[in-house]
Length: 388
Image (cartoon, rainbow, N blue to C red; front, side, top):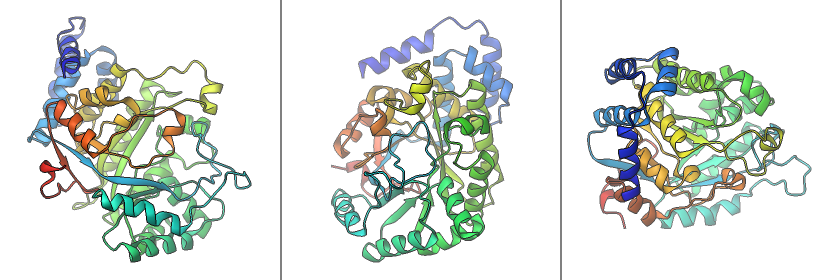
């Protein structure tokens, strides 16, 4: 905790703010839950001291979550296939259909993984894979129904907009129809996977075969219309500009503002830095530098400030480590995510941090908060403050 306090103190009182009056005016506006525009956000990014951003973001977080609690979850990420025709330049996990390591996870391989999660108290399965050229709607319907038949209480937080776009195109149906059929088969909520940076300039370089920005948002709009809870993400720190990061936040905020009354929409926003170890993108762009702790904390704080209509901001300890994640809890984040029993995508690109259920709670307490376990809908589970 000493290092956290030292960092907070240094950033709060760093006197190098040449534009403090303008920063203060913009941050006062943010405190009223107003939507900051592109120019205001850029000014804050380039001029506001990190400590000032952190303080404002934390005050906004306290308004939304007045209890001194930080939520976390037990779930498991299982990849149903590594076969993908997107060929994203940042991904080391995908394989071509005829590659010797290409696979589709058989149903029997899910069972022991779910059983292990069940014993740890988890009830949610995060299912993600790739844009398999031949897997259509029937495969996902059958998989979801079988998993739910074995585990009726299981929550499926599965797929993502790129997969929905891909399945809908294979079947020749609308995103709306595709989502309804998947929900009927057992899909409970839709992750914000495949967002990366929601800029078509960036997407054409990173993943030219993946869905466009408009398609990503159109899937989320349809999910919100049927009352399906979703999340939004950002993978940053590669070839995008600061302006594109800001535009990503503004676009997410705009779609959240469109959601029908009574729909949760984007229940959370999760940014994480690009993990480049061994990736094609890093080889093509050796000038890419790892995101610093200060830059990540600044992005977390600005996310809280720019997204007043999204309740939960998650700190990605998996990609930035415990200490930086803890500081983010003083910079607008109110959620520490999952213990990640299994993770196979960012880990093969350099993310090596790990927590068990005791460790994640200790980290939250060490940062000065009370850990509370939640489900995907951010319902706090009974007796979660006494978790062992």
